[in-house]
Amino acid sequence: MSTKTVSKTRGLKERSRKSPNGRSPRTTASLWEKIDELIAPIPASEWSKLPKDGSVNVDHYLYGAPKHQP
Image 1 (tube, helix red, strand yellow):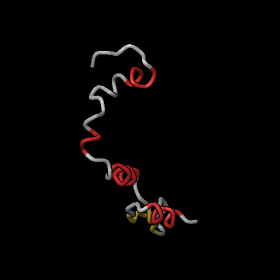
Image 2 (cartoon, helix red, strand yellow):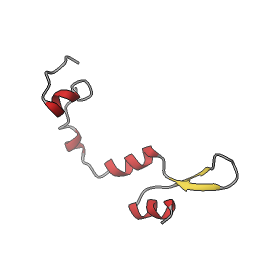
Image 3 (cartoon, helix red, strand yellow):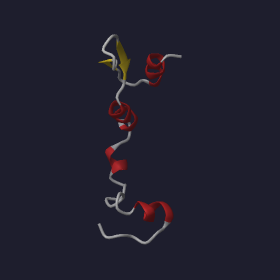
Image 4 (cartoon, one colour):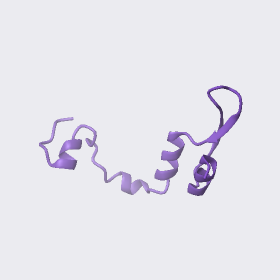
């Protein structure tokens, strides 16, 4: 199954980009486009439940380590 077929199957947006050798264009979705498609259905109310200091205290939230001050 080609990359183009897989991307369409997953419903991801696609964009054209020249290949590194500049010869033939290929259709791919960028990482940010893929992420955007995956998080789009999540309502804002769910995002507001995430901790504001999650990046600083990731070890606390995952493993129970003591919290650091942000």
